[in-house]
Image 1 (spheres, one colour):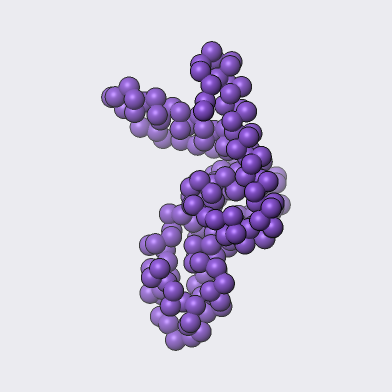
Image 2: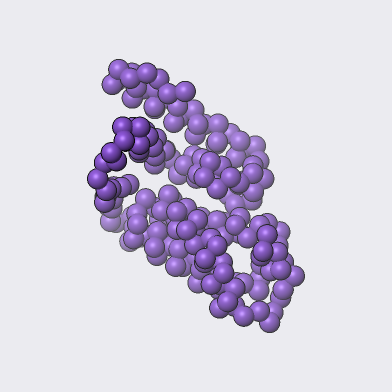
Length: 188
């Protein structure tokens, strides 16, 4: 990866330039993960900004024990958890829909059905407990290995496997349940 040089640098880098590169390469991933953790666009904006401030401050402390992506996702997860634990968030109830400004429906029937299916799946995933939601996202969206997920979550690989299995089972169970309610065929 192009950021391998960070493992060997302790000082003397232009932090502004490196931060710009990191934001360009991983900014969307950081924001998406923050949104997935907080379920709020505004909070995801704040978390992503805080993450890159922390990265800027700790850039010379990166030891290269994990990939840059894993390091950034770990910082994102911890920052989002701190925000969600704050007294302000606990006092305020936030109602935010997953796709509040979805555009007009696509003209092709298949695209419309795919979009509806994806929204239904994401709605089910977002209802999962945080611990299950985050492993499912890290695995399916970011493609992290079991070891990388364990490093980010600071748990054992066995715990990651268990959570991932439970998350998949919960999603499948919920989708099958909804299919039986609506008379649709089951998801496979």
